[in-house]
Image (cartoon, rainbow, N blue to C red; front, side, top):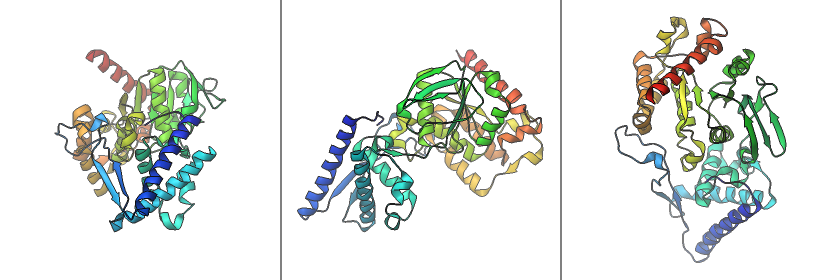
Amino acid sequence: MEGKRSSSERSVLLRKIREFTRTIVEDLSNGRSPIVLIDRFRNYCTNPNAICYCSTDLLNGKETLTLRRESHVHRLDVLLRVLLIVQKLLQENRHGSKRDIYYMHPSVFSEQSVVDRAINDICILMQCSRHNLNVVSVGKGLVMGWIRFLENRRKFDCINRPNMAHPIPVHVEEVKDIVSVARYILVVEKESVFERLANDQFCNANRCIVITGRGYPDIPTRRFLRLLIDKLCLPTYCLVDCDPYGFDILTTYRFGSMQMAYDAKYLRCPEVCWLGAFPSDSEKYCLPQQCLLPLTAQDRKKIEAMLNRCYLQREVPKWRLELELMLQRGVKFEIEALSVHSLSFLSKEYIPSKIQELCSESEFTV
């Protein structure tokens, strides 16, 4: 559903919106209850041994919304209100954030997630991506390293100062003229780790590109990473905390999220390799007991749910084994725990050795 923004594309979307609303009005005028069919997608099922097609971008059935069901009335009301706002944004060629849209009818929408769901429904109905609706995220991702690019005539030159953070562009479809001499891309979960690498002059020493989504990545960060992988064809590694939320962030980069499953093929990055931190690293790197935290009941519940995701067994069984090990040992730890050895241990020892291990495994496999 990806596409570049253009006047012709806006015209197509506006036509689709008019046709959709016209059908709704005609049904109501003729005394019929409008029926809205929304395709449903999923990027995984919860049967790890299933022979499924979750990664093929096939439909997973349809959801039927109708005014005959009381629970659907409010949802259709929200959908039409958001659609009217989107129509105005497209007509005026302006952009708005999800939060902007929420505050236009806060008493009706009640919470942000209601708006988010409506926007996703509209993307599916109009067969487009969110940015095609002129609905943008407030970007939070950062990038540094050996890369230079343009975004809407604005130049981002990270190469002159490889260890200086730059915001990841919100309008990724306008990024062009990408130049890089990097050897790989490193994605880190947290801004604190990103800053640690910047302070250690990591990009200077390793000639790479470093990206962080500052927690769960937003859409611009995921689209930007997808773009870099497509254009630069570089090995891509991901470093996250050794806890269930870090693992979930890792899988969001590689496999996509269930919420955005309809757009997964433009957001997921199957090239991403898990660099660490692994549950087995606590023994391998002799982390003291004080660095290990017990898994909470919520942590255990999340791990058990993730273990059932079909893509783990099918595509990355070694990842699943590590997740099982985390549950078995009952402990978690942050990436920063590796600093118990030295402040620069992460940048000078851990990451280079892990990348070397993965390169050796790849050569052996080939």
